[in-house]
Length: 220
Length: 220
Image (cartoon, rainbow over all chains, first blue to last red; front, side, top):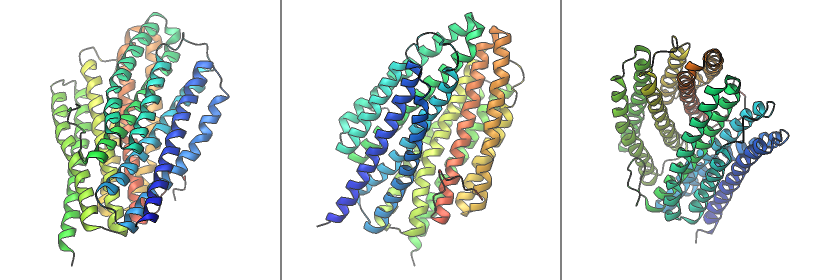
């Protein structure tokens, strides 16, 4: 009956997934560059930002077009408004990946502080949260969204741990201050990526249930 | 003709302004507590967050209701989607104000590093940007939105300057590391508040013109 319209929703879903894949890859490569100390990898991350920015504009445009032309209601409208919100979070994840490359620009020109402590692990959890949040979005999987939100605490704990360890380095050797600070910032960028994945999950729950769980602390 | 519907749009505008006023006040009081070293002021900021969270949910709800029931098009639809996006940014400004209080919780239990360098000035510009971005929203004032976006560079410059100065303190006296780090974080929170005000301005320009200037670097 409304075949053309489902096709538009499908295209929107595809764009969101493509953007999600891009910002996940940006995050992955930015941290990999840092771990493997490959400065040439950073340019690749920066180049991906252009595609992300293009998709950011296109997704908003597509959402407004569908709302204006198709006047969707109920579940479809919630899907489209969720896509608009997720779009914002994905773009900001891309920004955070770029921020990581900027810290890496500096870090890869100086000797390493030490192994990167728990930063690679933070990155792994944040990427997994992002992937799962988008899976939850396309499959309307509310349970997965709840599970993903719970992982945010792990990231926060790792961030605090990284901070304490780096503080110890800085205090015992002033020569490490600048490098340690750059790593503190990297861990904060990763924490924010996890926060954005959490936002996406909250939007998914709102979309699937029409229920707004934000600010309620009532995870099952 | 569509009087009831204009009333709904007016109510939505009011809610956005109320939320904007709250997060501006939160920012103001958090920095004031830091400057005047009044730890009791921090509780007030934290208490305001509950109201902000309530409005965050209510505004999204109102937007979806109006879209679903009134099926607005063109300018009205752009106004409503702008309100949804601005809502997200305002809520995150509230989060940043809370983050400032958390740094202040620590900073107000230790002796001051020195005067707060350019942090109060950063806060003044960020608050002004927020106020102007909301003025631009309610008046559809595209020019004011462009002017406000331009101020973001000043905030970024101040943030870099604050960072360099604090780095100098830390390097010359390891005893100031922890306090200086807390101030670095405060300046980053203020920078993010200015970023959110910039996002709001971009939404206003999209709303007034139906033009998406994000990622284009073509400010007049």
